[in-house]
Image 1 (cartoon, rainbow, N blue to C red):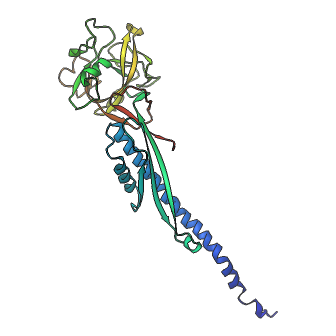
Image 2 (image 1 turned 90 degrees about the vertical axis):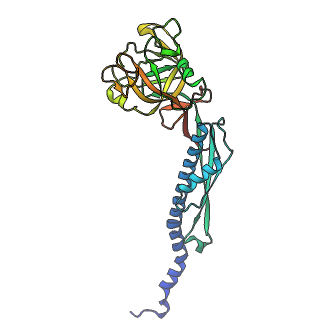
Image 3 (image 1 turned 60 degrees about the vertical axis):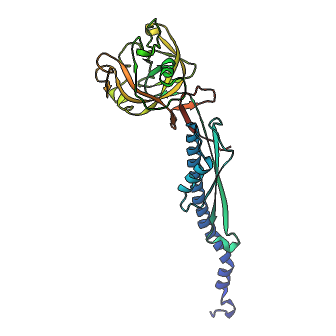
Length: 317
């Protein structure tokens, strides 16, 4: 059968008619993917910027939040063509920072349809505050009196190494008073969580003592090796009472302590120097300012401020 001459070019016409929607689909496939990549970079930059500013503020030195946010936003962007805005400007007391990052995603195919670029904005919110409860990596409680003696009752400064004793007397600080009460005045062991060497607690809570000089039975040398030369958040008690297995501590708050040595019993000894050896049970180190970014602790505005802070990502507001 002979092909009709009028059918010639029909395919070309169809291709021409479908070209625009085909370009539209290409734009969706490539340009939308590019927008997604741009937004991911902006979000990472916003998160990093907010976390950086929050850490500064948690250390009571917010510095220049706008500059810090911009630096971190740029560092987490492939081209650095990004703008970070901190609004409102945080203070150490505000307990929250919000950062918005803005960038432009340039399109490859969408300009055919009249869309050259799209402006994208992402946001991140981070909060901070003094720890109000959590799980300490060591089952140890320090006295509020001992903290005051070492820091003057204010925020910790310096790295002068000190020794905190596990005895009826807390050494030269006089924290147990003339009575030399049975519950240790320097630090004391706490009842641990089941099958662990850790203790979960919260402020204003009563913690029970694990009596005796020996470390809690579920603790191992590995548990103590883990904290060598590290800063940990430890419970601080302001009241204590009872005797023997009925001994207790009232939890006042949490402070950061950098551990430089310890000597307990037998194999539980590391970098012990000076009087922290032999029959003397003690911990060496110093109280310090520290920001905890793990999920081990919660924070609240009313928790006592002793240099330790918790920083946490919050839902965008």
